[in-house]
Image (cartoon, rainbow, N blue to C red):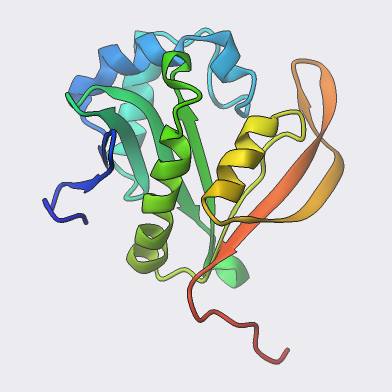
Length: 182
């Protein structure tokens, strides 16, 4: 991982593996409808202590799930990659969220900028992508700041809170990655 072996360092703190001791912080920061509004329905709302414990049990089995932590090691968000399978085995989907009190500080853009090369190397990927809702302009700006390019708009692709929404597809390629002949 990072220089310390247990975390990827950032100017605001670190990205590190989730710990069972993060349950209280996770439940407190994730229990916010403004956060859940931009997430898939797999992200519960309301988000309680049992939800936190379930997620942390899952995260313990997934090498690509990291907590976004402050300088005092409080988990205030998450970032991760889900590597693909079969013909998508060199591609991974990235996702992230951050507690509302920390919005607007460039934390997620920096986290994604640090996490992206780590994910390429650690999982042997050549392409990373994210699919924010088209209504989430802030996520698009985060992805662009982290070097991801807008590739597509998937029209009427998801349903969130009863509304049919478009999704945007942003992607980044590993250095030197080039498509080969079909």
